[in-house]
Image (cartoon, rainbow, N blue to C red; front, side):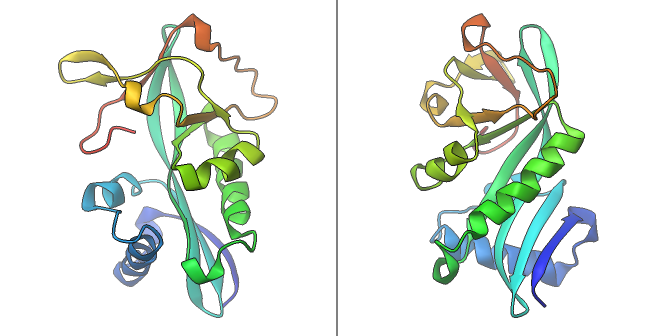
Length: 181
């Protein structure tokens, strides 16, 4: 089996979820924990196969982001990974193209937190580093997350009419356990 599959978490069997987890564990060299995997579930998965093997993955889950008094339905990109022996062949771009299509069709905004290794891929596809404050609506109220500033990228689908102004206030993400972003 070669090709791309786009499926919701509910459509993936236990064996396929195990293969996704194994891919992520290998791609992130053990730095992808249980909460990270949990964050990647509940949305749409892009699965790329070569020779019947899963070689790349990305998912889009719904989050709410507050900006300028509006709650924006946001497609948050999670768990983008390419198997180590298949990197630098354009598979990350294949995953992101499918991810962007999901965001464009279902959300007002795309967002993600980029590693240093992934930043070039996202910037090359038109994702922009959010130039303003990043925060979260935590259990104790709004909190600033300065450690996420400079690595949080946003993408407004073309023709969506959403204008984001980093000088007009922070992006505040909904709360979740583990790494908030």
